[in-house]
Length: 119
Image (cartoon, rainbow, N blue to C red; front, top):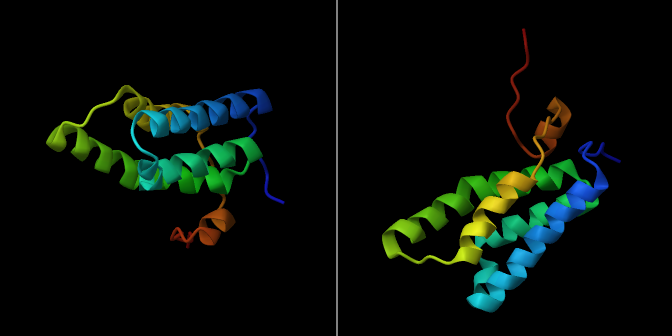
């Protein structure tokens, strides 16, 4: 079993519930098909990781959310001009809710992050 994030359960669960609530509100405001977009799947992964206190799930959700989800949302926002409050919150709240993670070298190898060894 992996070590947890070290954050109190009440804070983790509050963040997870906030993300889940935003997902539901966004699905109701826009369309259910948008829930299949990468940023929303990453947010769901992040919420599940927070609820279960699983740092690896949180890390995967954050990397995917910040690497693919947010840039695609910003392109949609600035190029297409598609704006909604729920979308803006859904792309910013997960960044605030996720704790900073310190992955060990072993954890980094499990999720395929190259690790250089000291000589």
